[in-house]
Length: 379
Image (cartoon, rainbow, N blue to C red; front, side):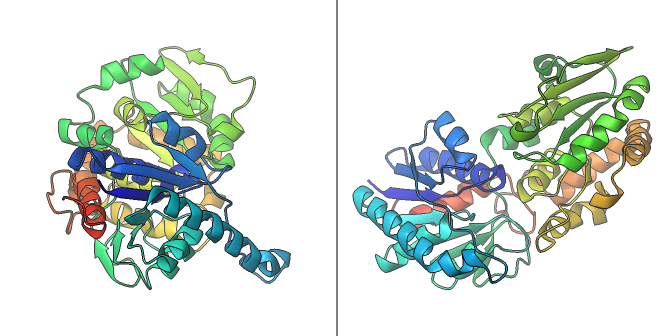
């Protein structure tokens, strides 16, 4: 019986592919023992137990970008978190560690290296994070979601997505649209805009949509607005105008249902969002996060360059811009249908190997197979 430790923390961008991979591992080897490791402040404390996976917590170890007090404390914090990770690996008799990035990953990677436990790295972004770049130096396998990711030993497999997403891609996003809209309380007719800034929300997107809300509704465009838990206003309420509705949600656990309900999405450019919207053929307006190393621009570039999405810089996203872009696209169903087809040709939902597709329907199965092989389990 193989013992696998899966590590991810912080946001859905890290936890979603981890959960998708866990599902694929259990399907391939039901006897496999899985343990997830995360941090107390991350989304994993909610989403991991919700799918029935065991979770242990260790301190996050952020990597300071400049010399300050946090940098001085870094060695101690890293040593303490690695010590705790080592104890967990010994306790469960880990045969392999699979990491999906985030501040929690580096201590577990280092603990695994110290114990001579194989490490598999899964990098979601087109530009890799610090923890995964460090682990790539000694990992047995380094798997990437995007081709050309600049990380040592990269093997392109595509982004692991949960079965609900791959099923939606396979069956067609609009086949279950009426049922999905009913679940969210949306009108069955007329265009629907899905808005989400990721699991943490995005103030810029939220504010711009609020400013555009009445004009969108008056034009017949309904809005499914996923605020993010920390941003959800206490006075949020459903608003109906004519035949259109504004429906606010704090957080949506099953994003496949939201994708099915929508005709267009306004989103950041996180790797999971880009891979999921591309694979299910949901045309999107991407507003990349303006800070960091520019990975969100790189993530969404293949879709935008192919004509399946549009870019708007964060500083340019005003209510007027939202109205302009959304009404232009929602007023042209043929254009939306064309964008959907292009998206699915870039992120092909039927590719059996993942190679050359940007996703591959079986990306989670591919990653699961590598992990099982690294730990000596069945494939």
